[in-house]
Structure formats: C-alpha cells, structure tokens
Image (cartoon, rainbow, N blue to C red; front, side, top):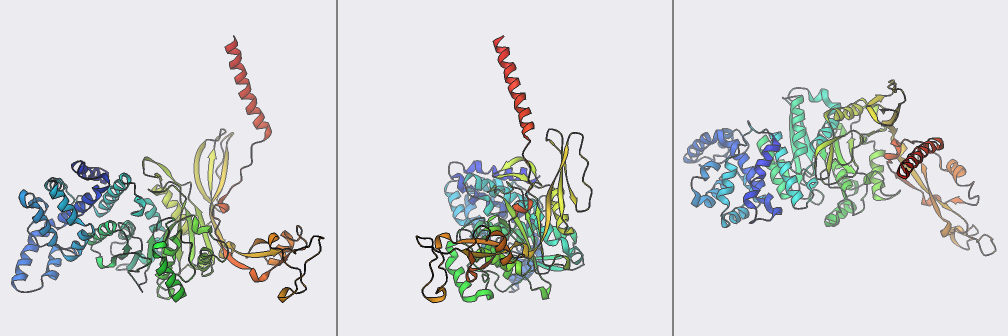
Length: 611
C-alpha cells in the first residue's frame, strides 16, 4: 500500500469523529493512534518472547529492562498481554485496558503519549462512545515495517499533518520540509565526503535544531545507508512543538536511535545540546517569524558572553529570527582541527541583504564571509513549500573548505529547475525532479561556473533547456529560432560582497552663499557640514575610497568631503542581481508590423460586418 492510499485510509477515521470533534481537533486523535498502531505492529513478532522474559526476570527479582530490550530487538518494549487487537475483545473495559496498555510501554514511549496529551483524548472518546470504534479502525490497519517502511511512514505522518494544518488554517511548513528539498540539502552536505563516508564502520553525527517530525534526519540516514550500509549516523535534534516532537521521537525509536538525543524545547532560549559539536547539520527554521518571546534570553547571552556564546556576531531585527538559528548552528560546528563540519540551512531572501552596514544582519554576514565559512548559496524555485510561495535559498556553510574553494563563494540559481505537480499541496505547486537535484549537486560538487542554454523557436516557444559549463559549446539554434544563455552558477571572491558605507558631507552656507565656518571644537575654522545635504555612498571593498570619491562624487559636488569617522564596513549578497540577464526591448519596426497586422484584421472584420 503506498503512503498516499495509506494516509487516505487513516484519514477516513475522521468520518467517525465528525460532529463530536471540531475539524481542527482531528489530529489530536488520529496522530497518536497512528503512532500507537505503528509501535504495536513493530513489537508484534517479539511479543511472546518479551512477556516470557518479563515473567522470568521479575520472578528472579532482577531488573528486567535490559533483557526486555534485547528480546524485543528494539529500543523500547511493552510488558502488557494486550495489543490493539486484543483490546477489542473487551468492549466494556476498553478505556481501562488501553490506559494499562500505554502504561506497560517503556518510559520513552510513555513520554511520547504524554506529549500528545493522549489520556485527555481517550477520556473524550470514551465519553462520546467513540473509543471502541476508533480503536477498531486502527487495529485493522497493518503498519508493520515489512509492509510500510520507515521512509513511507514518515511520508504518511507528513501527509496527515498537512491535512490537519489545511483544515485548521495552520502552517504545515512549521512541521516539515518537502522531501525533495531535504534530498538536495543532504546531497550537498555529503557530496564532497563520498570517499570518507564509504569506509566500513564510519560513524558520524548529524543535528537538526528545528527537527519537526524528523524528516531531515531520516532522509540523511537513508542516504548514508544507501551509500554505505556499514556506516552509522547518530542523530540529534530539538523540537518546540509537542506533537511534532512526539512523532519525531517515535520515528527515532523505531530506527534504533538513542531517543535521549531528541530534546523538547525552544532551541534559542534553552539549548538542549549545550556544549555538543556535530559533523553535519541541517535546518529549516521558520521564515520571517519574530523572536520577541525569547528576546530577553538571547540579548542576555549576546551581551554577557559575546563570541563565547552563540550570538556574538550580532543580533538581527526582532521581526525575523532565522539568522539566530544560523548563528546557533555556527556554535555547534565541530572544530576544523577535529575534522570540521558542514551544514545546510533553508532561509528566505531577507538574510541575504536586509540591514545596512553596521546592522546586526550585516555583521552576521560579515562574520560568515570574513571567516570564509560560506561555501555556496542555492536559489530554489518559488512555490516549493507548503506554507509559502516566496523565494527560498539553501546556504551551505563549512569550516573545512577544500583548497580550491578557499576564499570563494559559489552562487547557484536553481529557480528555473522545477516541474509542475499534478496536484497542489497548500502553497506547494512545484517540485524538483531527481535529475534537477542531480544537476544542482553536480554544479556544486564540480565547483564550476555554468549557464543555462534555452533553445526557442521563431515564436519564442521553449524547445529544450540544458546546462553548459565553461568551455562547453552552446547548442545550435533551429532555423528562425535562437539560443538564450543565462548564468546558473557563478563563483565570487568573499570580498566581492563587502562594501564600505562612506558619509559624504557638503558645506553649510549662509543666505549670501558664503561658507559657514565652525567656531569651536574639531571644526573650528573649517566648513560646517549641512545635515540636509548629507548623503551616503556604498564603495565596494575591492575599490579604493578616494578613487571612487573622485570619480563618482566630486564631478557632481566639487565642495564635498568624506567624514572618515563615520565609515562602516558592510556585507550583502545581491543574489538576483548576479543572475539578471538584460533582454533588449523589441525594435520599433517589429512593434509597428504587429500593430499593422492587428489594425488590418480589425479593418477586415468591420468591412465584413458592413457587407
């Protein structure tokens, strides 16, 4: 059964809840019951052995837990004789038996159901006479790992959450990231380490500070397992939303991960992995969400700890906290001397350019670029995410750049690499194909400049599209058509994104046009600046201030001067500007010819009516 059919079947439970539950509350029942049935199916084959072991070790007065974990073959167990199907055998006592069944799970599983506030939902279902019907429905769904893989199960959870978010007007994007975006990010953080990761017995750590339902960690684990079945990826994460945390924890339990590594809470105000460093990291923090709730704690850390804390470089404006997550990840990077770290983070366009020289955002970009940490930024297509259609960008950050990347940043414009989805999911109308993900991965891995070659016919219709690297020949245009070239991969020195903001002053003059001179202090005897004529100019770091001033300012204002004390260094990454291709407007002769065709057609129609 594919995940689409399975999630629709599970969703049909909603028919039982209609009337007694508001639509926005369906998820409070369906999600925990789905998790319960999955765990129930996973433990089914070892049930008898675990019960026998439990009886034996309890009788011997021994702590049964390590023995039960061994017998179950999982990182959890259940000591009740009940399971989902047996619960149905005693309809009158299903409420009490279900509570007893939940309590017989190992502590980590009980925590999952506490996070779901499952007890409240069981009481409510029992009160409305629905508990038996819902349990019966779930008992009829086979979620055994041999029937439904971990990967499919992850898709099922995401599909269910998306449906709940849609009907309750929430943002599904708060909980998970589209799988093809995750696959692209995972490819990008692993692509340069294929040799190391292919060695037998290799162990690496990966961390997601905004784990959601665990999708990023899961895809990374699957990717490494496909590459090297003997490799081990130890997963760490933190998640704020209780339901998402519970699903993520259940998923990690079934995968055999140490669930103590998945922590609940707010990453920014309460770091659940304080002092830990990681080999790889992935994150999709919320876009454009204010951080006022945690402002006090974040400012305190910034002011008291500086660069010894997480937020030393600077603080962004309170209206968008995504750069705080980026700085949090910087603090979690394994030092280069111990093997280093690479991470991928999805951000909107704002962190690329918001904030002038000296602002918090600019200082964060300055820290990244002056410390040579940014490997690449990839512009994704719009309409890729469930809750927003805006432009998004994947930043690849590393403190172990290979020699050929040192001092440089690669920008890749993948905004045209998409295909239309058969059916929209919320705001998500587009997806990237496997070939398109491979194209971006190869452009990054090859570290080369490249152009998109778009072949169009005489009427401007697109016939084909491909990528040509530097030095490769351009395709041949068809008769009457042409080949349009547009950059898709560009490489820049870090300094190319830096500039100095200089303050240009003009003298104050009296009513007769004479200079007003200062009477005291540093400006005594010198022309007084006129604040109404004050202006600023951004001078690229690669250019001298004086030569720029002579060329750009003095020809227009011969009496101007620079106030050097006010000069600030800033950094911005004008991504779209570097991929802009000017298309000249059509010639007047072409436009006139088109107009003549239209007017002739109108004239012919009028004559026909008159006849």
